[in-house]
Length: 456
Image: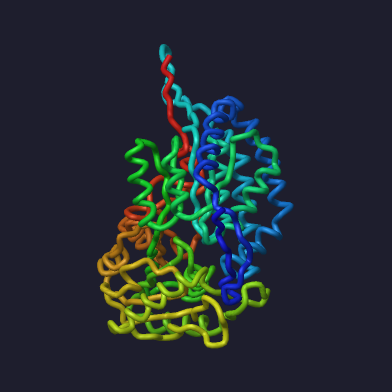
């Protein structure tokens, strides 16, 4: 039996544990079980489905400490961040449970004296939910729970880089007593994920890289099934001369350096008006220099390693190539000598051009390129100079200007002065190569459904 070996990137890749790769025969059986169960699960209705899933909610809460601990060991995120992530996720879980009935209720879209037109939401069927290694508990909840609530059955696969986390989530779900076939987990690498999507599934729900997402979308197209995908991002933040720099500094520090910069929705390019460019660089440099880097299992650690040696090597290449092309290192741009593992110092670069990897590619790590602009038009052009369009930020006290910029930015979400769009009731999803479809909120439920109109 093939196995996935999970290692700790914060302790020089020591072995954390192992997970057996799910054989193809078992994947086929789990999909069959899901298809066998989907009609009964659909007929149960949203209220009864939510009641069953509340037991899963309680089971996960009892294991909160275990969830945070395994994520820390596998991914390298500091234990304090992991505990905060898990605690934050209860709000999403609760919102999904509390609001599914309302948003999945039939809607009257037109009514007069002789006719009524009603819109109803029906589940799609069996869903392949495939999630990445970063923020594994977030993505598990966002992919699995809404699908189950709308009446879909789920076969779930976590990234092989967080296989132990995925196994734990599956075990907790199994302990909640869901009907057979409604939820199951498989384990493996991209090969197993692709095999899963080749089976008789009715939807692919995927979060991960744009490269993999495009491939899965092609598979979905050949099967003529729907795909909901949240993929890569290279989010810009535009800072105008009148911005509140204290507020901006706090927000950018979190949006770039939290989780060692390894989130799709991180700010990855900072675009600053020339009048405050030096101030912004100096402020961020001073804050970056104070970040405590170390073993992620130490509560004092503020930044841990990247998730793997592969991620580290890719980041080093992106930065070194950019520096050779003329980028100026303000701080960082190297590995710390005193730590063994996938560590990389938080970095700020200036002197950036559009051909450098740190600008034109998605950078998954604690590296922030900063460029300056003079006009609104230049800022918009720089911000939109990317194949991605997940999110963007604008910092200014001029709300008319902020709204104008928001209208011009090619992104699925635009935050003005750091307002956080990550709320369970706010639809999330990007433009361009950042994906298609929405997660969360009313639209997040509806994207998992077939919409039927009944006219009478």
